[in-house]
Image (cartoon, rainbow, N blue to C red; front, side, top):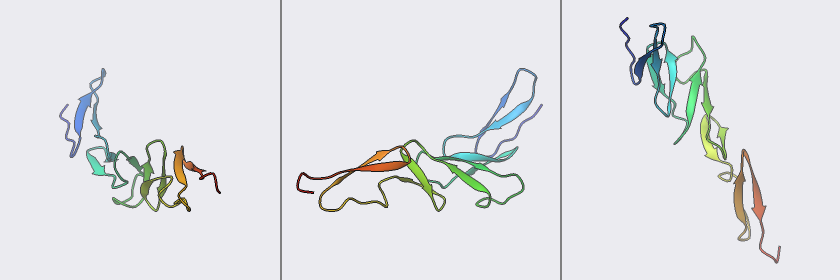
Length: 102
């Protein structure tokens, strides 16, 4: 069976069924198309069937990153520490380490 897969590559399983597999930072949009996720470096995605690219997209973020408006961000990105504190990502959240005087 011939397999066409745009932006990915085809593999054939033990039953001879061809499947399109997508590289990192791409998600399976249709059975023959891998679409760019545009979720950020190292992020993958899924697309809901029947939607156009960009609609129905769900980012699958790496550990220590969270999705915010369709982009995977480090948990500390929008939570800057004040007064010289240090932000440490902890999964999808963060922890502050303050200086002794605070």
